Length: 60
Image: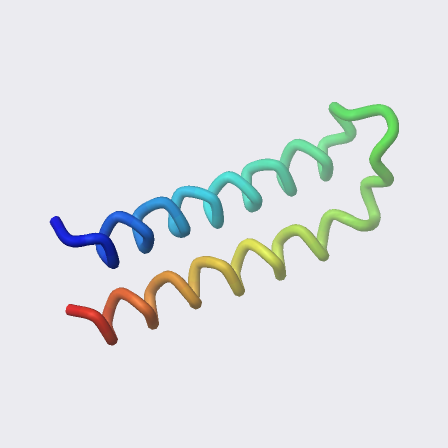
């Protein structure tokens, strides 16, 4: 594996983690986070995953 593949893998994992955190916020498991703002986390996670996928396709 080269450096680009490792970076894309880490970026993809971070994107999935942001989406999972959005689900946790949506359920109200975190008291200080407003549940109505979780849609921003879903959008951010999708952007990170899309960026990772495009970068993977460009460097492969």
